[in-house]
Structures are given as structure tokens and as C-alpha cells.
Length: 263
Image 1 (cartoon, rainbow, N blue to C red):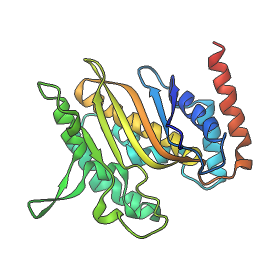
Image 2 (image 1 turned 30 degrees about the vertical axis):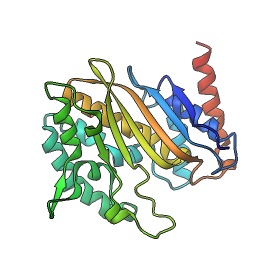
Image 3 (image 1 turned 60 degrees about the vertical axis):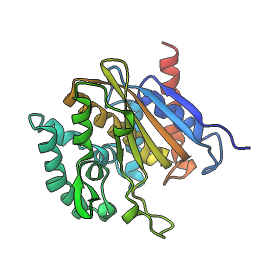
């Protein structure tokens, strides 16, 4: 009988990711059962922590995306910080029309799409007419309504059956399938993401960071604060690194957890 999902709780992204890594390291790679990483976002976050620095140092030696770049594929935080006067629609148009084409031309890895592009300009078919749906803007509009909107309508799909149901044994994109928003009290929201496969070392930290940035953007546009981030991984794995190469990272994660647990 398979084990139930492991619930990993973090006081912040750093703590959640560190416990996630140590959990996955307990079993042979690709043998880990489902895991739910639940992170408290109701507070300040150190974007320059020792944990993140060690992850990025390792990723640079493995020719993998940095945590910043991975996060940007979900939400372009730096672009937003330079354009905070824009409306949600205008910002989404900027990302889709200007940023997405540049990122695709710079790296062929992005040729199949980008997560923020799927959220901001999803290819759909309405009454037989091809159209583009800005899922992110729609959710912001619903959250700004006079009443709490139905939870089933606060969803964004990143998986497109028309283009993603291929026979390729490995495709890379999209690993993130769906993002859901829920209310958290009267003044807050939570965000939940679904990953069928999740690479803990080379992707997960950047994923959590990008999802938090996305949630904070939604909060900024609605007056609600992001309280919690949940990430459901059906099949967590170490990723595109060897276990022998991450000893220093595991030691850093253990030291970080020890430092916060002794406070």
C-alpha cells in the first residue's frame, strides 16, 4: 500500500524548502511519495539567505537556472518592481508582448512556453473562435468583487492539452499544472500549486519564490495579503544533480533548520 502524502510545514520558504530537501534525501531518488509543502507567507522573507546563496552556488556549477530565473518564469518580479504604476492588464500585456518573446529567443528551453505567459495569455477556443484568456486578470477582478467569489473560479491552468499531450518521454514544460487561489480569513488569500513531478534541488526553491511573488502581486492588486503557500508534488525528486554533489547544500539546510529550532 502506498504511503499518504507527507506534509512539510515551513515558517518561511527557507525552512519549508530545507525540510523538503531532507525529506527527499531519506529515500532513493524517484522513489519518494507525494509531498505537500506548506509555507507561512505572513511576514518578511529574506531573499538573500545563506540557504538560497548555497543553492545558487551549486546551480551555477551544474549549468542550471538560478533561483531568480526559475522564479521569473512563474512571475517576473523584477519587471513588476519597475512598473508598479501599471494596471494588472497593462502589466500582463507588457509581460506577454515584450518579455515572453525575448525569453524564448534567448533560450530554446522556453520554446514550449512560460508559466506567466500561460496565466496571462492562455490559448483558448470560445464558441469556435480562437481567443486569448488572461486568467490572472480575471482572478484579480473576481477577488475585487463585492462578494467572495466561488473557489472553483479562482483557478489558473498552466497545462494545455492541445499542445502538451505529446508522446515525448521528457518535455520539461509544463511541470506546474495548476494554481488555485483561496480565501484565508477576511483579509487574506492562500495559493496552492500542483506539480506532477518536482525537482527539489534545481527547481523547487525558485518555484516557491515565484509562486510567493505571484501571490503577493495578486494581494497588491486586491488589497488582500498572501498568508500561505501550498505546493503539492505528486513525485518529488532531487533533480538534475548527483547526490554526491549536494553534500554542502544538505549540510547548509540542516544547519539552517538547527539555527531556527534553537531560537
